[in-house]
Image 1 (tube, rainbow, N blue to C red):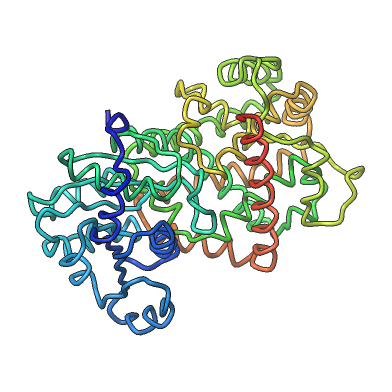
Image 2 (image 1 turned 90 degrees about the horizontal axis):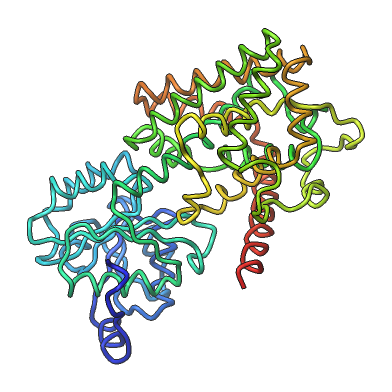
Length: 448
């Protein structure tokens, strides 16, 4: 096992930090986060580059910070002992094809992408045979410190001595190390993130097509709804390629996406046909599979509804709240049930937003009163049927875009929706970050 090897410590680690060169190809937000945190951890030879056209700009940005700015990936590859590609997943094969052959003899190479199968394929295709592969995935965004966050470490092609050096570099980030194969990584991220991402991007596009700001709609009032709205806005305030890469490039994601769409279709048909008993039975079976019924002995993820109330983006009083079917959440659990996936089994690879997303679903399903209200609303409320029709259509539209493999189509759909909500994205990001902070603090205090 990778984690069973003794760590590099003492004089050996001090010497390594003074002589071992780490190179980052790509100076986006995650590349800069790694460069700065490795420097702060005492690594004295940290190299970084961006596009050659941005060399002077990057050099000015990092002036005096103890990070060596180089003109391009060739320079980084020739000098560095551990080369980390920090580029978009869709662009990584092209970048590795260009710079991989310049890798220093015996160097170690890794990548920061969230989809590992195409990354490993590119490494195997373009890197010299003497180059070793230890790759990684920090399961958080660039605005969150690596300290205490999950970090997947994948030892793919590497001898013990080189692995120990790469491991020492990654360990200095202060993250919680998780050791997987690249296939395990991609399956787990597909099982957890593919469905949640599709649900929330479809919510946003459904609101946009209806020209509705959810914080101005009585259906989206209250603590649970505040979390849904803020998290959907958080996605649309992020970079589109992060979500596109996972959905389109992850070989395990398409099955989950197909099943989620199928769950939405089948549940919506039961709603409009009034098949109340069959609908309730199906929802309860899914609840039992994922959550073990309403009283399973597990401490809930989400904070109470009253605390979540303060994160509203609007001013409609909670007393004016109109019940919601929560079709997006019902279909999420139904999808997991149909595919035999229990998301709690994958918390080892949780991202901070995923834990909050799972908390939303758990809050709905483990509260019998809320779940029963959702079922009754889903069957009986014709106005909700009309609203859910838009969500029903958007999930199919997004799924078709993903299945076609169109990054351009994904980008256009994503950016059109983001533009509609542009005026509130920054506020939602602040809200969702505070929610994640509260959930993280709760989790850490429970684990003490």
